[in-house]
Image (tube, rainbow, N blue to C red; front, side, top):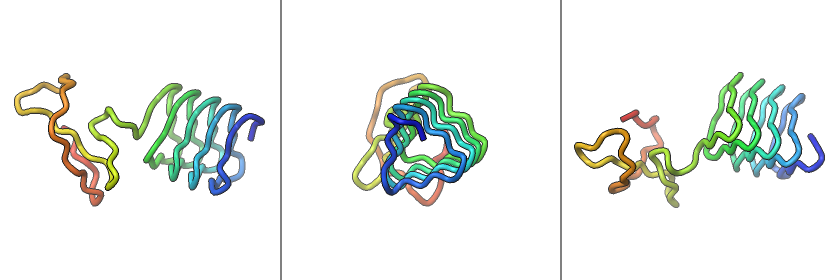
Length: 123
């Protein structure tokens, strides 16, 4: 782990993890062996990253489970609002498109609570 990186006391890193300067690893995060967390990346609370992954510079991961051998490109944002879900006290809520709108519409209509039992269907 590089000087200038921030690692929460409850985060768990397996052997061989590289954490570059400016990176932040949040509470309860888990990072698998051989993974690289580049400069200024932010790994949020409870995020799990598999083995031999590459998390690019400035990327931020929240509410995520990342498998083995995954590349997250620099500047990528995962688990943030703006991708069909908004954060809520009870968990993420899905934003539904108005009837008849195209997939390019940016309008947000009535949110509905997402079930945590299954992955959401892709509209």
